[in-house]
Length: 498
Image 1 (cartoon, rainbow, N blue to C red):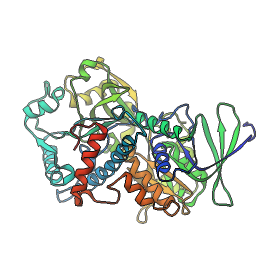
Image 2 (cartoon, rainbow, N blue to C red; image 1 turned 45 degrees about the horizontal axis):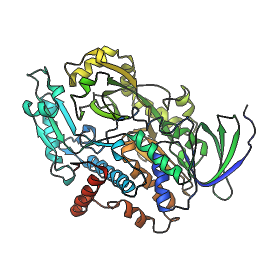
Image 3 (spheres, one colour; image 1 turned 180 degrees about the vertical axis):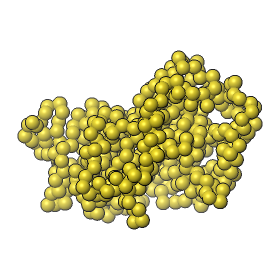
Image 4 (cartoon, one colour; image 1 turned 90 degrees about the horizontal axis):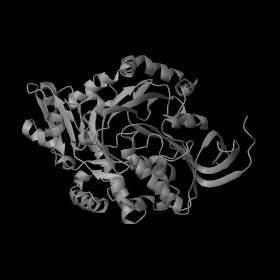
């Protein structure tokens, strides 16, 4: 039994979860409203330990340069690139904000969290080659993707990804696109830098803290009961605004608030496993992020890719992710996470989603059963000479996809991220997964605009001073696009960025 509450604390804002989302929102708030008092509560013993950790996400710097699932083929055979445009614009908001922080000396050593790395798409077989060519022809016409190149020439492909071309079958048609200006982003390192900056501003991050309950106060704020796992004691913390950025744990916390917006919302967990290369000689021979096409029935975050990564200053190579199913909502979560998230108000929503996604469930269960050698055979589709002894399995982070009702349909499983907020703007939560961290700045701008739009004077002007393209379509402002690209490239040390 928990000890009785021993103290009451108060701040303007509480951030729950010490990942990239809370770090970004806290940093934005301190820039546009420096007088704001903020407290952070994290249930683990360090920041960036769940989905923001560098080995728990793809680190792609999702800019839609290589992810084929962002460019859908329509019934008439045309390629819809609008989602790719939207995601690329959102990623550019992120790099502009990071560039601003570096230029002001608020965070340093950008090479520790962002590296330039070519982004490529790779396909095999006549049908997929035809798809990739149409995709390239659609995308290269847009200013955001004008430096994309396409090739079916094996000699060119050997220059782009030599490791993947060694001893490859000569009879199967293959093709790839190449964008030299992609990035690898270490979101764990970035998150730690942002929290260090917040600490310098007096923002206290409380670790090993579990949020137990929320009570709405008469003044419209929140009384939050928090268990300190270090002492076993509870405390009450009062805040005018609460942000829930706890990754897979956000749904349960949102439900605890009891706000009507939390009703008819559920979560579907997807786990992941990567193969990590433990042979440095192999890792040094591949320098790119290469994405393929997802298997039929696979969720979008399971698109196979062979990625160069920079972790703790070391270059490594990962392949995956292999999807799987676990009822946990967090890597460090409980097997009761899924069943305990089902409430009377979302029961029909969750059941409807389950009935419509039986094929996905079967796919995930099949993925769980794969042996290491079966996973190696999938890797050999990318790297034919891959040797089992050079690779080890590592567990990636958990992702929880949103299930919600729409005006037209009950129990829709959504892939992406979404901000859910109370009508009065006193609480907001970030749910969902990919592209996630890469678009963290845009997601937190939505929180600011929804919940602080009428509370912070000249909010939009203050935000645009940091993020010049905010609210603009860059394809219609080519001079601004060129200016941003030059500034970001120089500030973040990306020699040939864009």
